[in-house]
Image 1 (cartoon, each protein chain N blue to C red):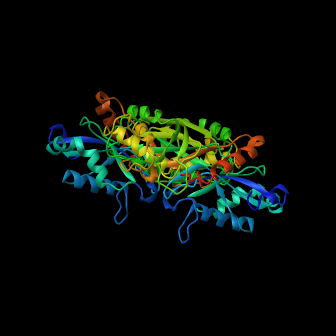
Image 2: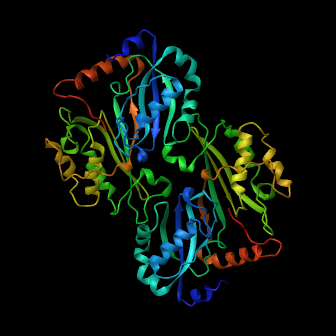
Image 3: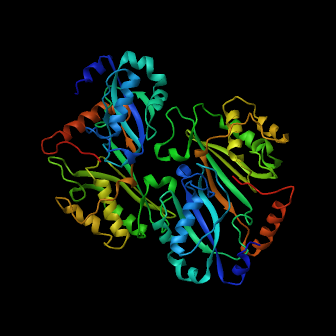
Length: 287
Length: 287
């Protein structure tokens, strides 16, 4: 229970879900950091203006500097009277005060049990690479990593498939004290459309730098520098593999977050929170 | 015949087709203008570096300031000896010297009869509008016009269909002396995907500001400010209609240029040039 939860349940506060997208290029990541331009900082400032009071966001996926999102989800608690007055025009008013590189597409009242972070069942990321000689489409260059060597996507797809399942991804994670690195990768595909290679990965959660490390490992396979079995072979390690390169931030985008149906929200959040606050598991540090 | 044509036919020069894309945001259009950053200027500078000699481009569609291209086509003539030496690595070397907002995706030797401008059978443009309250996807905001009112795309599609055919588009063109405004619009569709509205129009050629004026007229229909029949009703005018708004440049993109098969290239260029250099028809001023 956070400080607000009892007020939300008593109806004094309304819990509001925001669906958010951003171009991460000019942000120092999601999370507020003193003196830096962050997505959370911009959004909380815009919300404070529009809602005429302090706004504090909880987010599904705390993206790193330079990482984008098209399907980010956050929640905040708004005084019920303010919500009743403002909700119909909130998205339009936010569009007027926010910079063009961050947008709120929807603001929806949700049950008090909804928690953008702890209710989430899965997060889905996409990583885009262009491996042509000429380089990425200029209009999409902010969200595509340029690759100088051509990639064999059949090899990459086979290596990705071998990573699906419940594993300790320590080899692919930047170490954080007391943070678990055991994750379930539910889906992992690699497809090509012309010179554009798309890697799509879905997991219950991701540890820090995990997607970009997985991409780096698969790219080594795609270039032919490593065997197809190499990334899955790293799964038995207990700490970060220094020979796995972290792919550049600009190719990465959080595309979707999955939640249970409303009537199952409470049990999911309680369950996630319990698991993640075990002293041995600690704080999740989602990418 | 341009000055180069006889040298091209004699094999001293190789005619080269370039397939080009650019983010028009930071360019003052295609055509070289003193003191301004233009696509043609950047490309000719890059080509001069890589080919170690002057480069002069002829283009299919001279786009205005702020207009983008994903399928622009240009040609130039390169000394045959330089081409033989450089062609295999030309695209990669250009990628290294050009700024990231302009890319050459292919450089191909073509028959001497190929003329990027006069051989073209048609040009195809796309105009993107987002009419949601929240505004355009931040990662695509450079190429999507934000619209504050919601658009009825069924009405717009019906109005677009009525513009297809051979007409005098004077009402939709910025006047240029001795320039014909008679054009054949071959296709014109309006579709919606969520809040993203795409207008796609193909014609033999476009006069200056024609696509953006057509979009402005259709948007007035989509907003309900004008009847569906209004844009087609303007076709009988002989000069620009001042009540047609020109839609913002950022939504517009040249997506493709169509050419005849190689064996028909010569006759097509001769035919187009003859028509367009008639004193009564004059210089085409393609958008």
